[in-house]
Image (cartoon, rainbow, N blue to C red):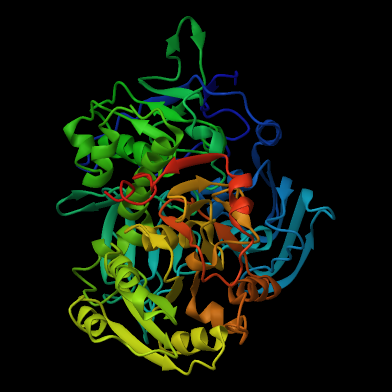
Length: 631
């Protein structure tokens, strides 16, 4: 593969067991034979040093003849995750060794444990002493299991992998098929042959089958929903849907330089056959009926600013739509002004509008805001975790579509309540509860009336003024009913999509706690907004802004809850999460502004502290940070 062209022809080291990669997927939703075609990205930047190693090693799976022993060698974590989309991951194994040629610890001192794995006899983990290098995990089982199940357990050793907490949800089973959107989680599995049945409980809730096949089970109550499905989504009565496993395709690792006007720009091209040429030179290409964005493409897109799609084909609309959605999920700005109707109809309207418009933004902040709008629309409209529950609502109408979130607002300053509550009630996240903790103050009657008509469930908690801030937060948490809790500060500003951003990041990062950095600071006495370094975005970290933290209520309580201290409560929780083995993830900083006023701060290093570290400043509050970020 040459520099400047990304993709693969299906014969390189990244193409593991290509025969049958689309098994059961070669038919269109209407039953006609599909004409897959190929795609490629032209004009790619040179690979990074880590990616060069990743390409050299690729992804290799060796099955020892006459045994059920398997050796997996992967050049990167993304390549290891790609294994879950390949048919070879369904091979049974009783002994597996997984070697990651280049592993980097999510944080200093990381020591992840192996996930649940039935019939585990023993395992061995060897991680590099300095936090980066070759990592090896070996497992031995008393009974064979699918390599895919072994992979799900091993991924927890190598990085955070916590699913979203939900009070109820269906089991998802692929029958003789491996859709690319099927997550590697205990509630999602692949069955070979006849589905198992159970005399005590329905064995499966949602069963996915290849187009044109009929399911089989030993009992009529083996499943509640049976769908035919393609590689990228189920075929429903009103047409196909496009779903993506966001734990594999997401903006993690996206670089800040991608928003500069001189950031690399690539072009998406489609072609009919493997030998298609441009300028007399054969280029790397990828089959359209494959899994879509693979590890090598994902690594390249982390450096790319814009993906231009001048000509989008009308054939294979599901595959084309899935590819565009995956590209958008990475955060690269995607422009496809000539979307055919059959492709556009498969993309949620919010994302479709963004894709159909040209990239005219020149300022880095405006480009970053568009990237956030685009990835947010793609994730909440097409990520399996958020889209699939809505598709099953006809059969399971009482199941929650989104995890519930409780917003904790603790205040000693009733004069700030109207503005703070307005920012909470205007959040676009649908399943939101307000927990208002009055710390030694009374609730003004106008605020009580605002809560009564806001349309959100709410709780009012009163604690004495002598209680510490940590105790007040603990009392508020005890009354929270959401699966997730997040903290708002009464003196900062939040965009209407802020909670959505945190929930999405919690899903694709698998971290215990997520938040944003306090990059944008509004200095009220000067009337300016500055941007300062606050750690890399879309990556694992050690610290996030206290007013943006989101964590599952169960994880918060299992870590010890809030410390009963009067100040630095946020750092106390971050420390407890780290001590408990949890990971902290920092998503993009847009949608949150930290305010500095003339007085009233428990920590006050003075304005020069902020001004000296600023690398950008604006008069007032730029619309892209708070207002323009919401659709």
